Length: 282
Length: 302
Image (cartoon, rainbow over all chains, first blue to last red; front, side, top):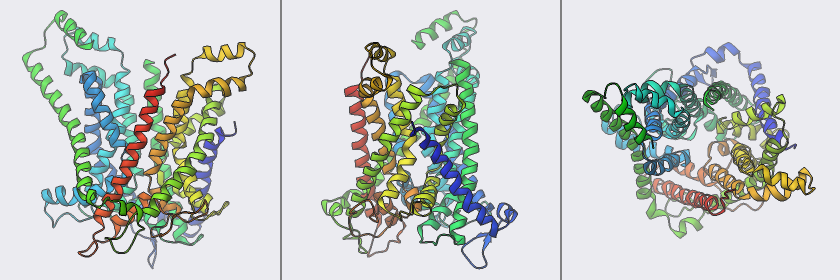
C-alpha cells in the first residue's frame, strides 16, 4: 500500500526540488526583477533575469496553437459525436489518436524541415520568415493537441442525454440548430475543460519549440522570428554541463517553478470543469 | 438509431426545416469534414515526408553503426541499446508500483477518506505535468542531490518511469474494476482472505488489461526527449550501455542531436534524423500492435 504514496511522493519531490533551488535563486535575484523584467539574458555578462520575454514567447506560441486546435478539435468532436456513422467513427478516431501517439520530436523535425521551408516560406516569402520562427512551432503544436481537445469534448457531448436532442427536433429545429444551440451549450463545461487542458499541454510542450522556434528570447510580437519559451530555455540550458549551485543551475529551477505553477493552475481548472459535466448527467 | 429518431422527430415537427436551414446544415457538415480532413492530411504529409527523407538511409548498417562525425558512416546502435535499457528499467519500475497503487485504490481505499481523494486528484494532476518538469525532478533528486546517481541509465529510466506511472495506474485500475464482484464474493465465500482473493483471482483476471496499459506507457516513454535532455543523456557516445550505472544516449536524443547539427554539402544529417525517426516509429507501431492484439485476444466478457 506504500506504493500508492509514490505518486504523492513524486509530487512532493517535484515541489521540493523546485522550491529549494528557486528560493536560493531568489536569494540572488530580486523577485520583482524576475517577474516583471523584460530583458532575459541570464548566461551573459552582465546577466539579466527578466522572465517576461520567455512567458510572452510561451503564451504567444500557445495562443497560435489554440487558434489551430480549437476549431479543428471542436469540429472533430462535433463530427464524431453528432454526425459520423459508426463505421466512419471507427476509422477516424484511431487516426486522430495516432496524432497524439507520434513523439513530439517528430513534429519538431517536421516543423523545421518541411512546414517552415515548404509551406510558410512559400506563403509569406523567404525574407520574412526566419528558419526558426514562432508561427511554425505554434501551428504544429496546434495539430498536436487536436486529439486532446477532440477526445474530451466528444466525451462530454456524448454524455448529453438523447432526450434533449429529441426535444429539440420535436420543436422543429434542424440538426445544425440542435447541435449548436442544444448539445454544444449542454456540453460546455467539458468543452472548456478540454480547451484548458490543451492549452496546458501547449504551454508545457518542449521539443517542437526547441527545434522549430529557436533560442532567441524576444520582447516583441514578431511571429515570423525566433522566440524562446520557458521549456526551450530549460532544455537548452540543461543540455550543457552546468555546475550544481551555479546561477545557471538555479535559474533552471526558477523557470521550472514558473512553468509548473502555470500548468498546475490550468490543470486544476480543467479537472474542476470535467467534474461539473460528470455530475450533471451521470 | 439516431437517424430514425430524427426522421420521426421531423415528421412530427410543427414546422419542417426550411430549405435555407437545409443548405446551412449541409454547409456545416462540409465544414466539419474539411476540418477533420485537415488533421488527417497533416498526419499523412508528415508520414510521407519522413519516409521520403529517411527510407534510403534506414539500412542494416545504420542500425549496427555508432554515431560519427561523418554523416555517411553514422548509425544509431548506441542509442538503440540505450533506449532498450531505459525501457527495461522503466518497465521494472512501473509494473509493481503501478499495479500496487491500482490495487490499493480499487480494493482497499475508502473513497470517503480525504487522503484517498487527495491521492486520486494527485494522480490526475501528475498526468498533466509537463514532461520537462519530470526532467528537473530527475536532475534534482536522482542525478544530483540526495541520490547522486549521475547521468546514468538508472536515473533516466526512473525519470521516465515516474513520468508514465499515471498511465499504468489508470489502465490497471480499469482492468481491476472490470473483474466482476461475483468473482471476489465467490472467492471470499470459499474462505479466502482478501489478499488471497486479489493475488489468485483478481490479478490473474486483469493481467491482459494491465499488460496493455504497461505497453502503452512504454510507447509513450520511448519517444520522450525533453526529460532525458535535462537528466543529462549524452549525445555522442560510441559504446553500448553495460549496466545500470553506464552513461547513455537514447534514440530521441540521438535524433535531436542530428536535427540540431548544421548540415552542409559534405555532411547532411537530415536523412539520418529521418531514418532514426522511422526506426522509432516502427518500434512504436510494433508496441501498439502488441497492445491491440493483447486487448483483442484476451478480452474477457463476464
